Image (cartoon, rainbow, N blue to C red; front, top):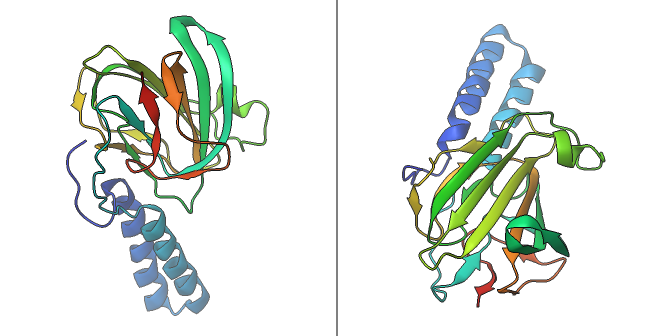
Length: 211
C-alpha cells in the first residue's frame, strides 16, 4: 500500500465527495433537512475513514502486533492443517480505525479473496458466506501467520492494496475494512500475549511472539 499520510484514507474520498455534492445540491434547492442529513453523513464518512499516523513501537524481531483496531472476542485451540494451533478473533466496528496494518515484517505468500454477502455477525452463516480475504504472512525465519478478514454489515467492501510476494514492514498499511472480524491463525510455537476482552490497536498492541 502506498504511503498515505493524509488524515483521511484514500478509500473514503469518493464517499465524502458524493456526500459533499449532496450538501451543495440540497442547499441550493432549500431542502434543509436533507442538507443537514448529508452533512451528518459527510461527518460519518470522515470519521470512519480517519487515518491517524501512529508511532512504530519497537518489539523483538519475532513479535506479532494486531493488524486491526478492535476487541479480542475469542482465543481457541484448534487442530488445523499447516500446523495452526490457535485461533484468535478480533471484532472491529465503525468506532474503530478501519486501516489494516501488517502484523509483522514479512512477505505476503498468499492472498485469497472470497466475494459474498454482508450479513450481521449474529448470523450463523456470516462466517461462511460473507465477503472475506485470507492473507498468509511469512517472515525471514519461516514463521507463518494466517490472517482472515471477514466483513460484517457494511456499505463498503474490504480493500486490500498489496500483491502476492510483496515485502511489508511491521505496522505498514495494507488495506481498509469497516466493521468486521479479523481471525489470526497461530502455530504451536506462538506465545499469546493478550486475553479475551482486551482492546487492541493496529501496529501498537502486542499479540505475542514466535518462540
